[in-house]
Image (tube, rainbow, N blue to C red):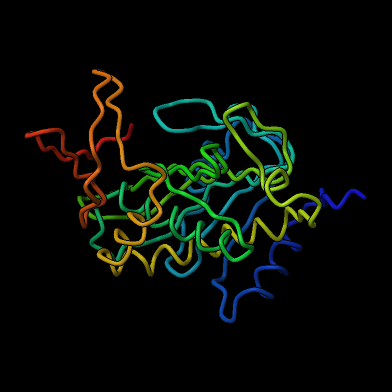
Length: 254
């Protein structure tokens, strides 16, 4: 029996969001059947209608032709996954670390997925892996104006029952024939984004929880090929590395 739920709609996402949250935020949502990139569409939407302080916005697309990943890489985003870009007005925040924000969203999404009994690891800085294969990717961005934080923005791609490349994995592959409702998981991503704001207020807890879920205790430098030991994550979300008598702190996306 095919339990995959392709029916999409902003109203359906809202319904699941209210059912699964006692006091959900008042999101403004948009759904595209297809687009080049939800990141591009989000930028257009913000330019037309700025994000209000207590009303975050998110734009979903059933599929993307040129989804954006880390370092400008293309994210494989066919029908059957959750592809979303969101923005939250945080003018009252002193946060200035997009890397830490990415870890907060990553941990919050891991928590949501762990609720269905799936063991998820975090590949620093913000990929989610199951059995070494990529289940989700996160692209965090901070936008400033006049030297002050204006917006937290994040793009999330989560494989549900879509076809995935060989290095990827979908929730359907992990949990089998259980109902894969795309609107439910769209709501779960929104809940994770909301939860990430609370995690940012407790950075030590955030980083310790991420550290417990790290995919590997080794880091391979892509430029030199050298393998470093991961000793931990500091309160800024950076990797503390060591190799023999050498130590270094890594903060760049890799």
